[in-house]
Image 1 (cartoon, protein in one colour):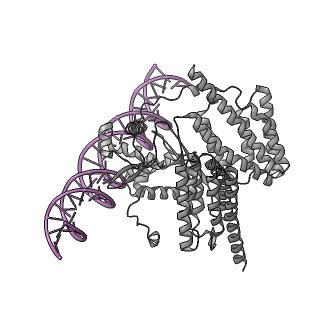
Image 2 (cartoon, protein in one colour):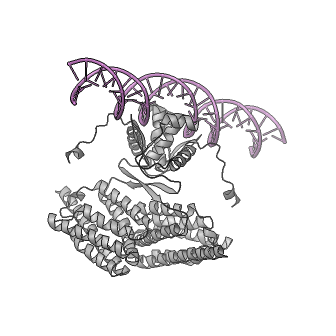
Image 3 (cartoon, chains in turn brown, green, yellow, red):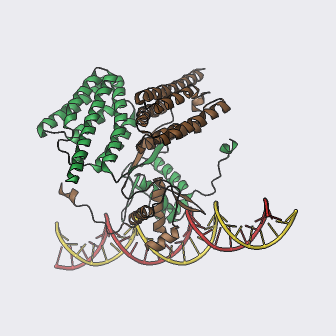
Length: 244
Length: 244
DNA sequence: TTGGATCAATGGTCCAACCAATTGCATGAC
DNA sequence: GTCATGCAATTGGTTGGACCATTGATCCAA
């Protein structure tokens, strides 16, 4: 038991020290997402470490999505950084078959219902305007192309997750979205995929705007149900085609 | 629209290429977690890239928790790696323990309610027996130590997630559990933490055994509510202590 | 057998140079 | 004056080689 109280001493931890110093720097300079941080060469010189070490440290931050590196222009902050951040790698095993897609949908149903409800309780007028704007953009795209546009659809949902006041929802649903789309161009060959879900985007927005958490949750569940139905329809069509 | 069909060509993507090659290697050699992978120098030589590039690639994997590097010994696989896996870091802005804990709890509420409901619909007699066994073990531990035992409690919940028929739930909640416990030894100094949740473990089990999905969901929500209440109670006590 | 010294293997760091993409400025054609 | 062209500086990406620090195995002596 007592070993737990004796963590090994850290004689060297160069890159961690670099990141710590950099996090302090970001906070002291109150850098915002989008701002440019110092050159690798400058950091190396200032911190008295080799540029290589700086690069390894920045590679870690890049992997965490905190920073974006653009060759020729510089390294830019991509998310808010504070000295006491907690990072936790998430590893999800998935396949590209029907069952795996349904599993991502089940998780999405759980998360989205809760996120939408929290959003209805917490969102402020500013975030609400953003959500409405994304909704309208999506509706315009829908009518122009006579079908759901995944890009605008995704941005609408993202705006909601972001307004839920809990950043974990956005990150987790992004993971589900990634898994879902990794194997999905036009999902399993279904035409008009997502067509049935169109209507519920507006009803979700209206319930959120009305601060009706349970109503919003109910509409979100209906939306997911239409996606599930689309998926099942596609699977049925595939099975039929295979038998012929 | 047509730009979408013309993604920029990748003239260089060295470290990504390295990771891809390495993932293929791991799969072909069927390396398991704990196995040692080739030396950085060997990888650099075989892949015809500089050792520095290999290091940047491995740094990314290390950040995702896929790999562990031990100076003097080597680099070891820490988690299963396959091309079908999704690796994504979760970031929780720290600085405020209470808020962070509540955020993990909100996610847990969403996931657990759904998992319990699915479990009630899908679990077979064998998994049900396992759940009951875990429940009884937990109850014994509770009476012996006059308090909740996190270990047995966690195993009970894990058995439920595993019986939900969707492995994503177990993986996600494990991540939440891990985050929760990083903050939390005895959470914020609350005594008898989780005491109020004890009763609901059995009611959840009973609803699952009765195949009552919505009933099980309701009991799970009550359980989470007690944990939230404990957390708020601890936070209130801390605030009060700070003012004195 | 045990204890310590030695040494090879391996990840960690450093350096100096060059490559590749981007940006901005200057020059020049119209 | 305006716009295009092209050069040059900036900046991240890569390379090769060297050395440091830690680990683990091997060997030797007490």
